[in-house]
Length: 226
Image (cartoon, rainbow, N blue to C red):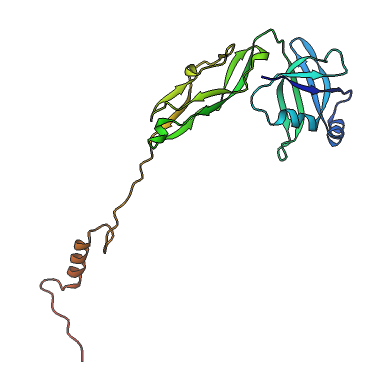
């Protein structure tokens, strides 16, 4: 995976008022921290951040470029991005420093490819997970993990342990969860349409209509009043 280069600038003040002024000026407040070190206050250009990182899936290695020597060229991951509830604009960003020589756990999206045989037979593909956690070196983080579903028949299942992972990556899981399956076709229940009385054959309906019109046995015939 290609490393993303991102410019960060130092900031001195904190507080909602200052953060609001920064956002109106096109900057996003952020912090940079790591194991055993205090958080450093920084900010990033909102347009640069959106252009380089907003559309990316999964975890991506970021190299920070800064006038601060203690931050410049450090490697980091996006730990958290707080967003506006309506516009989804970034409000605050957490950068977490990583050691490129030590393995880390990251979330990687799954990409399903191929047309399952069970889908051709009338079933439907049902993804049960959209991503998994893997352990790898920061420079070996896969952009996505491809899952070939073409061999799946109806009721077949692919589990986490069945996935083919890139070299250097290992799946991290407590239970061997199902990733994707092919569900059987849904049977459509149809009701017979009867002529005449609902729920009865046409011949029975006609008989029932005739009998209801005939006078009951032993009943006196009706006479017209003059």
